[in-house]
Length: 497
Image 1 (tube, helix red, strand yellow):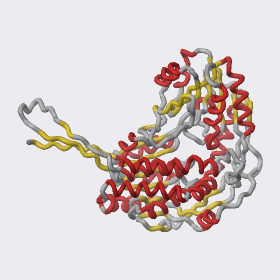
Image 2 (image 1 turned 120 degrees about the vertical axis):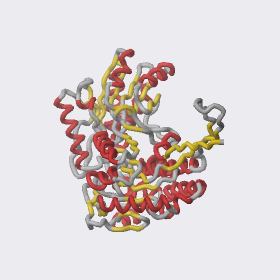
Image 3 (image 1 turned 135 degrees about the vertical axis):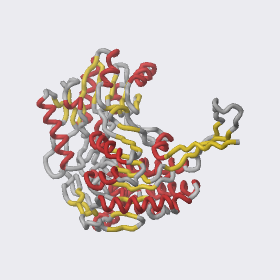
Image 4 (image 1 turned 45 degrees about the vertical axis):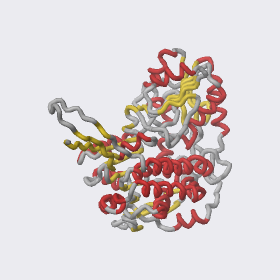
């Protein structure tokens, strides 16, 4: 399927050398001596060899993070910390082409997409967070104490870093998810042990090199690649970790929440989704078709907020389905390093098996493909961009997160029942509304139980915008000012006068 495309010399050097763990500012092998291999999803060939961290490496990394928290990092003033965070963003853009290529090879996404979206968004996140470093202020309070008449107090609040943070990131946006986690943690003065996904550790390891170059002190950021059931579980359960931040599946998020009860560490979770994208008859239908296609086929559909449930008002249903089916059929699928590629392979054999299993279930339940509907033969883990119709609310393809380029389109006629249909899901991450009636759009946006509602747009991400979900889509928010609350404690100080 994929045409072989040569990698740049910097990428070749990086992938040809065994990659190690970063602990306490030193690159080191795993204590067990174990390694694991990563693969190019477009060919199935081995891409790189990486040290496999486990519980004993996590112990070392947490201890290093604790020393750094109590040492040089904690003594930096906010302006100094902000300048380091900003420099990380600068270095990401200085190495943008290399990082985009690594991301494409490790994840499968087109390099052009990574260069246009993932890399600049990651840099901008660090730049945005750097500005907050000097603005994390408490406040003064004039307390009323009814049982102490006449007493006077001076009271104020302090905002302090929560401490050592364990961060576990997914494989769909490896560099960007690392930025979403690391930016606010560093800005607030926390120290970090980061576990990248075992499928895609390379850009996180390269980012770690750039962070050391930016002046991040030893032990402030530690990177321990490994498997979820070993390194990830040990990090989530570690008694000296003050907070764990996780992005990934809802199933694993529930396990992490249970594990974190050992020392009642704080938890933030950005989890799965089954997001509705709604097209009214009065919408700009051509724009809605393009937006719906982008909403599901971007990043191979491996997006937690993908618009995978498409609801279209009856009189425009055939037109919208035909339009998105044509868009799906015209997508150029291929190797991510091929400049003509518009959609790459799925990330792994496991994910390929998952998506193709859902396609089989959909066929068994009576869903009909108007575009795609099957795997693509040949090397690599490629699946056709797929549009399904004849789905109903109880079908598996409508209920469960596929996490691939598969959309289920359904007509609606009862506008009053639309919010119920949109909310008929265990998830509540995102939604889309396409209409020229702005009042209708705002009213529906209020009724939809989701962390982000796009109106006449989809997949709009910005460092300023909080991102997260309702219901089983997670706890807390990423990005924006709100994410800072994930990484800070508030202390009240009361002085009797």
